[in-house]
Image 1 (cartoon, helix red, strand yellow):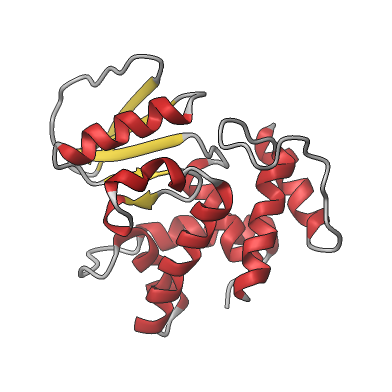
Image 2 (cartoon, rainbow, N blue to C red):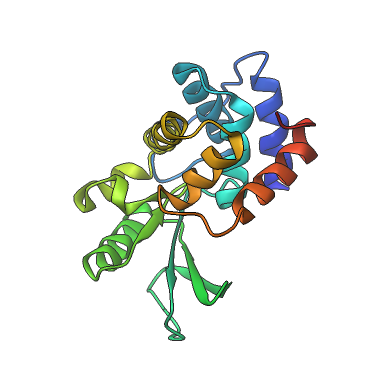
Length: 199
């Protein structure tokens, strides 16, 4: 349901500003209006196609800004106080997703994981910890900060690669050699479902 509401608000926001949130500056709570407006606002500010920004947010987190994730080869069950943890197979490893209603809780968990050597993805568009200082993790949960950082990562990829496929793969996997185009396939499928064709 949340995805449908955000999609509706997003499409409406493309043509007019939807500004019905009472708590837009709080990092502790985001509603659908906040998310849709922030996606549009940051896409317009950076002259980035809002449909690409929307699709990345959708496939990264399903529009959940209070989420962190990391990949591990350990079969260990990860448990954190005041947080919900999900673990699933990811190729030959596991992906662990942690959500909470508290930015403070997620920030503390992320910082602990980063300090322990994990590469952690944070917030709405899953900004990897190589892209920010560990002490600024709480700031990365701010919608505008997170989306702006995501768009800057996308821009770095666009500066390096010409094809949309390689840019999108780079957003997810960085500049390392790509062994598959699985992320682009997921992006393309979602984009076509919501907007039609991909160039």
